Length: 153
Image (cartoon, rainbow, N blue to C red; front, side, top):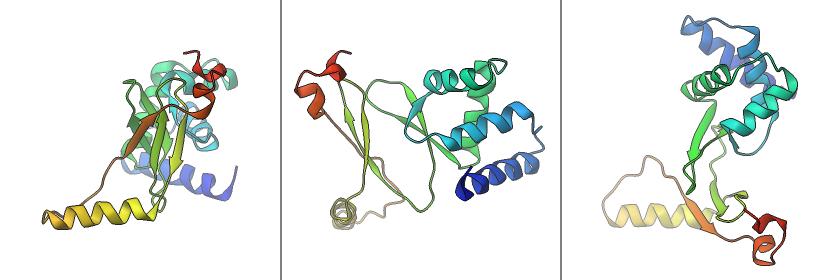
């Protein structure tokens, strides 16, 4: 496990201790597996990953642990146009937006300082102070446009 993943796992365990919650081997394994995965995963996708590692961990335990990771500020629950909740590791110093393919579900993380600046300018022109934003761009990826395997949804 990388140093950042070790730090994230420690932060989760500290959160659990502060809240007076049991630190079970299953919760520890779920959190460690979550920090090892990159990208955006639905509960079902993440559960399948956990199941392949430890078939004894139930889906309810996975769901509750993901919610605890969100409560701890270490995971973010995101919703794209398909209505499925997905989870990604929350990085306090790494803001990003998303481009989402409506056909295959591929998600790309993007960051462009011009978008961030324009949002600030728009908010200021309306005498509005931003506290955050969610920005998703939807469309069709190159593979789906070409009729590749990703287009068979």
